[in-house]
Length: 293
Image 1 (tube, rainbow, N blue to C red):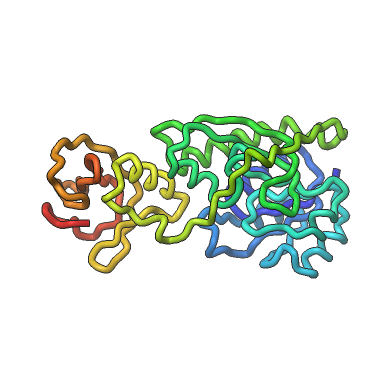
Image 2 (cartoon, rainbow, N blue to C red; image 1 turned 180 degrees about the vertical axis):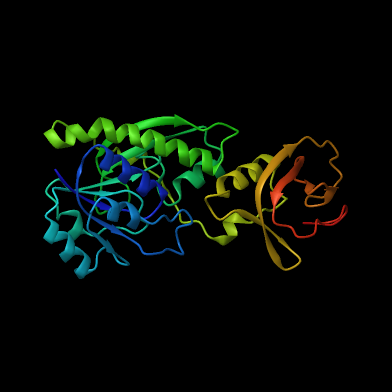
């Protein structure tokens, strides 16, 4: 089975490594030379060169030149694991077996953008690792493999990212032989159960201390590394915050956003319902007790 691989992030690298380990016939790789958009961008060039796999740097995956190059490789199937733009019909129908995509959410629920970030920001307790055959819609194609996983209170973006990679690698090892011998099955999605998460913007990462403590905790852990980080707007600057802790605080006549403790490189700030302790941040000088954030 001839596989054309598309990807440009850490997840892409790890899955490509797995496919090579399983002695898959990777006939070519489409990737990016660099990316200002993907905070988890990873170069696939070294592994391609090490394994003598042809690769093409791509800006527009649907461009005539890209599609023409892929046609010359005559893939039986295309794997698209870690790509941020939609694939159009010409490429979707190029390979006889179609395009296999990946979405770390419980499809048909939670289609759309930033699935790991939204899951953490919304405080979800579970999600799924889903491989599906791509269609012209967003994440709406038939499911090939889906495995649920739990999201613990202690989890953050990095730990969940690592977890979904490990789960996905197990799934690949399970379904790859079925794709090769054509014994796989496809499960149609129930579109009546679907919702679509929107694209997040910079203002979605602003910590507003009028939020309750748990909402702030979820926001910070959702956006921590490898993502861009939540931030506080302070003295005209954006201050990144990487880790916080929920603190019990009973005084209800203190305004939200007031600094109630400051020292040892940590800050405790009053929230709507309690308080938050900021543990990892990029303040050059700590705000003083009594200041407002």
